Image (cartoon, rainbow, N blue to C red):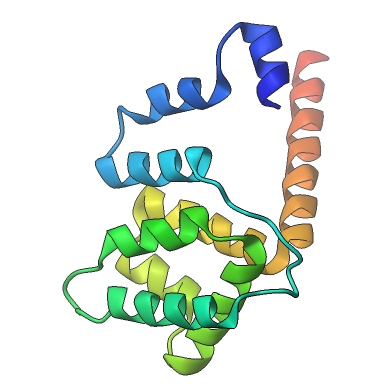
Amino acid sequence: MRFAFKEMYDKDVIETILQNVKRSDDEYHRFVENALRGAREEEDPDMVDEKGVSNDNEALRNAFADPKKVDMSIIIDIFSTRSWGHLDRVLVEFNKLSALNAKATIEKRIGGRVGNAIQIIIDVAQQRHVYWAQTVNTFIFMSQINQNKKHR
């Protein structure tokens, strides 16, 4: 994608996105920049470092420990840099051990653009095929609507 974008527009896609995001709040910009520039190392989703999962689960629970404040640096680090398989396991452990649902907690405690971005990350980590099938279906549906409007 980066190569195609560069060929078509003579711009770097990551820099273009980051320039547009800079106009937004700091946490969202930090999250997007980490996600775009970070090295989300992909490995076999069944081969996950259990100690790393345990450490991230504990860090995630600690990030939400204070009822008045969320430690966003931990949240941003975990959700923007960990592999999809690792995130899936962290979320399963979080939901099991904390008596909280990660998606509901993030929606309630974080919300906004950062919360929405993290919700997408969770969907991709836990049900990536379903997420992409729904995204493609929405794209096709919207394309058909636009085509119908052009032919009127």
